[in-house]
Image 1 (cartoon, helix red, strand yellow):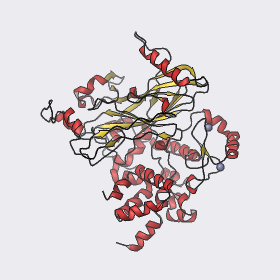
Image 2 (cartoon, helix red, strand yellow):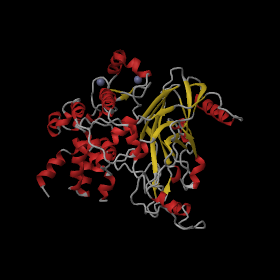
Image 3 (cartoon, helix red, strand yellow):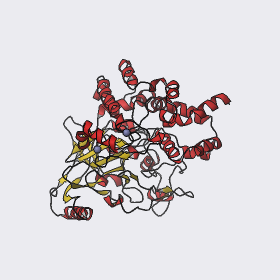
Amino acid sequence: MDEGFIRELEDEFASLILGPAAASPERAIASDPSSSAGGASASSNKNKKMPSRKNDPPMMKAMGASSLLSATQKEMAARKARKKDRKTICGRCGKDKLAGTKLQTCSRCKSINYCSESCQREHWQDGHKEECAAFVQPPLAKTFDPSDRPDVPWPVDPIHASTNENGLGIWMTTSGHMGSMLQQAFHPPEGYSSDCPLQGPPSFRRWAGLEGPNQREFGVEMKKYTGPSLVTLRIVVQNRRTDGRAIAVCAGETIMNVFGYLKNNLLPEDRPRVRFQNIQDGRELMMSMPWVDYNRRLRVAIVEVNGAVAPKGKFLPDDGEYEPPARPTGYPWNRVVDWERGQLVLGPGDYAVYCVQYPLGNGHEYACYPEIMTRTTAVAIPCYLTNVKNTEDGWFNAARMELRIVRALPGPGLPPGHFNPLAPVDFEYVEEYYRPYVDHGLDRFAVERYGKRAEKMNEFLLKTGPLQMQSMMSALPADQREEVMRRSKAMGFDMERMMRGG
Ligand SMILES: [Zn+2]
Ligand SMILES: [Zn+2]
């Protein structure tokens, strides 16, 4: 092992993941030329020749890809311009949280941080006043960090769809996983364990008829669920109304609209939760409700409310069975009306992040997100605009009561206050995002989307033992350690496992 190389990398450890903020500025620029100028990567993209695309899935071909680049560049430029709004720095002066500055979030839009009251006041006059109420960027969700890595031209969680209807802001991405793989049926929405036995925990085996009273032959259909076949969407919703009214969001009823080529790949149990509709040019649209899993749980997980992250469940070590977490109470969790069914009541400024999962593929034929995502047209979320204002005492209970009454109303048609915002998927953006994967495979995708730092990180980790890793991590202050964990996860590295020597 090259001692010098290790020492050099060890020296760079924090800056590799935490960015230039953690190192001295000169060094950060020297170690990574692409980080020196914000516009550099965008302009070099402009001159890049489009690679040939022999293995295009049929839908990608049909959509025609030649004019994608300009649209994507526009989006990229907009994202770069928004970088001041990222969560780790002051939106006015740029002081960095990671350099020890305490930041406070704008309490109205929760989309921007400030180091001081004067910075906030000046920025308000400078134009945040207008921006604050408008639909600009998702709130500063920990799980939806648009990333502050200047060497990476793409955000960690790219926004594949967004809309603003009736004052409800929606942003959607796929739940980021470097492998771009669909998940397996025995993985809960939040969590991934490669320690799981291939055929899943006991509850999955009973459900699939692999053992127990319903035992049946392990047929082709069941195999679909032991291969990767689930897609997870990550969605941010925020009440951006200015009139004080609360919005009830039925996250667990989020509908995913996909071109229906997967019709014949659904299990009989899933078919009642799917509707098909013919659309103009002879194609079929599939409207799919979230999956109900082998434990009869609806696959919706509320993962964050107003910046607080919900506790996660865990895999039990003995047999890989999943144990759901205890539900927290008090603020901000009182926004959650029903965890299991994914019902929320959001006052103005309140936001939530949730994951929702759909059985969409046959793991043996469709193994990656790109195919699914280029066939997804939109997501729709059933909502109710309540008559309750959050200035009233007990607005939350009143809104919850109204939600209950509205949903209990008999008869056909939609109840009053109902609206169904539809967030259309930005095909061009999705296709451009996954292009390296489709054209060149996973490794190239990782480098192009997660950057040189991810490549270096990989190189570094390959040469670092678990003990060395442990001592380096314990040398970091607690908040930086947490940040390293989070960002390395976003780059596809499981630090906890690596420290265990996995
Ligand atoms: Zn400041
Ligand atoms: Zn604001």
